[in-house]
Length: 320
Ligand code: EPU
Image (cartoon, rainbow, N blue to C red; front, side):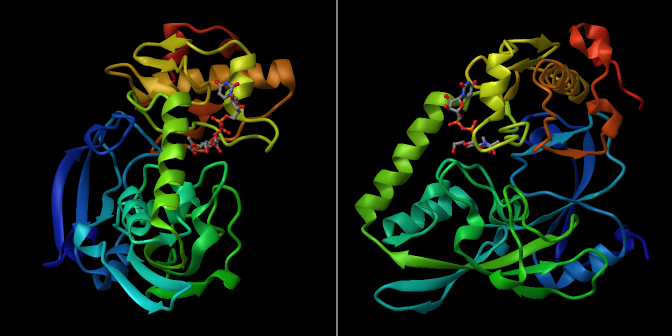
């Protein structure tokens, strides 16, 4: 059975340029399937290879039309349900399509603490779980009790408790290709004013240090060490403001590459190689990518001696 044959009445198929569905505003056209019933997922996943899309916030997509179809959860799968509550804590089940920022706002308003340290992180709950999204002060897995997932090559939805998982910095601990459907969060009762104050302070700090008004995919690299943020390193290397075509290393935060208008994935890749080249040559540091890549050959990101200088040729690794 092909993935097209596996589509059922709970699936909507549309042809959409991914530049419209990613915060970086880059990406070719793709077949995008939106699913309204989680029970359809095992059949769909068994019928082919998919890309999984959340809010598209941490993603760099090839400019050419995509070969693999894209799967995302319909907002109907963003339900919230309290499973347990007392005067100190509670367990909230949340669907993977739920918007993280909206959830933080609702919890803070209603006096439930735990997620407010993630204020300002753009993500769906499913995407945040997949990446163990976080800030300097919190990770989503800090309050996860259980997750419901479909593992790659598995045929049924399964729950995993926190004790069975091994989440680390920007990694859920589950294999690549795991689809996150639901989670249960342990939250504690707190003062709404305090929670809203924490969330707004974090958002203000983010707005002051990150180029939030520009199209970007958030931080491009993982921090190589807790005491060496990639943004600071790129700043010290003097690379802020470097540009290839429509892509530019942010003047505001060195770990952001912004799309100033019409940028292509290969231009972003040229800047990534340029940064990697200098981090390795001048400081002996290998920077790992945090941003997820779709259908872009890994060779695009491997720096060679040519990447020491920027030129429009530097951006011509395109093979397709
Ligand atoms: N810094 C510079 N120059 C720069 C950027 C940063 O000197 O161009 C310095 C800052 O002044 C600060 C230090 O580096 O002293 C750390 O910077 P920041 O507070 O911005 O934190 P970060 O480590 O760069 C991390 C996450 C961000 C998250 C922030 C705030 C990673 C890769 N990044 O950034 O997450 O928003 O903390 O909590 O872990 C993301 O994952 O996409 C992301 C943006």
